[in-house]
Length: 232
Length: 250
Image 1 (tube, rainbow over the protein chains, first blue to last red):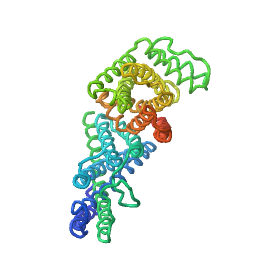
Image 2: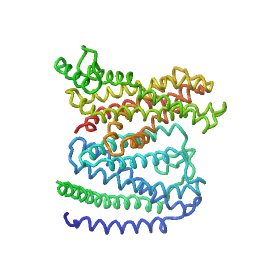
Image 3: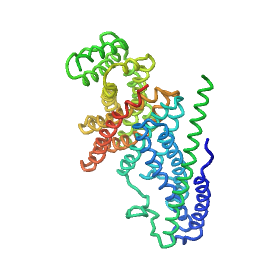
Image 4: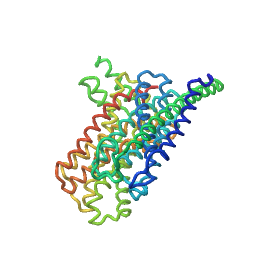
């Protein structure tokens, strides 16, 4: 295993710093929202984690296609790293959303398109990991994983449109309004700063964790190789 | 090319299932290979009736359970019939998909099929068609039984179309995932876990369209879910067709 590259060490420190700044901006710097009060502050992290998780899931599907074409295990490691980190981020998104929804919507959960799609997406990728766990041969595991990541990545957005046949109450803060939305608001200057910095911070943190996970994947495959040689 | 391939296809199919499993001797190689796979599945099923009877009895049991779980009185029947039907089809479908792939794996027939010098996608389409056929037959028996038991008319042409479209989407993804799940350690348990989350759009759209037809909603309200079903069917059949090679290759 190569020693940790300098760029990654720097990125580790940068991640911690931007997380601290983002926390400060969200909790102190941004003004309190008039109607919802302090609970609105989870929004900055809610969108930050959601945005990076969605990018990560798309990346995972793209890597799975590249793996199926090239059959190089390097792409499989990138795919699982993107999906694993995204899954955790998306879980944070859901938990933060629930915390916000309790006072604003008066319920922890509702079967709204976004919430349902989020739950189904998490279940798809939970199934993805169960599938991978059930296969010993690394090459077959990569192939099946890639196929399922592709099917799941295509199905999740279609689920979103399918649930649109039913109504929605989720607010659309960025670009556009939803007449039925409950808990929508407009952002003022300092809110925008906290919002965009949150997006930036979670993107940096995502790249850092992603990089670590790729290195861990390399280590895993090395261990597997050594085990295989030991048995022979 | 086709003339050289055909005898080999027949041989391998015959050797792996039962004697005289194929019949047709004309048409192009691909369709011949597809029909050979379908024919051997149908033949095996006609003789054993394992899969069909299991799916049918299971479907009836699910409906029975729903009857008590939901107290299907006249009022609730109106609103939940579509949901009950699709839940029944989805559960019974996994039985059929699991069975159809695990017999291939258990008896070593999959290797025989793969050895046949035909396009692998022919095996996929053959399996999809036979699975679809079994599922549609089960559905065609469940519908009148449900109609009689609960006094609801289910023979609406639109509803039958929705059932056909929904079943195509279900089976096209299900066959691919079943081919994967039988090759894992957890096997049969894994298929529903893999299948249900990715099949959610089909079930949602099918339930919406079915209940639309059952309650006599306007066509403008029923069309979007039907369009979505068609879209899903096309996209996922195409994707499954493209990736099936990677699922069965050794």
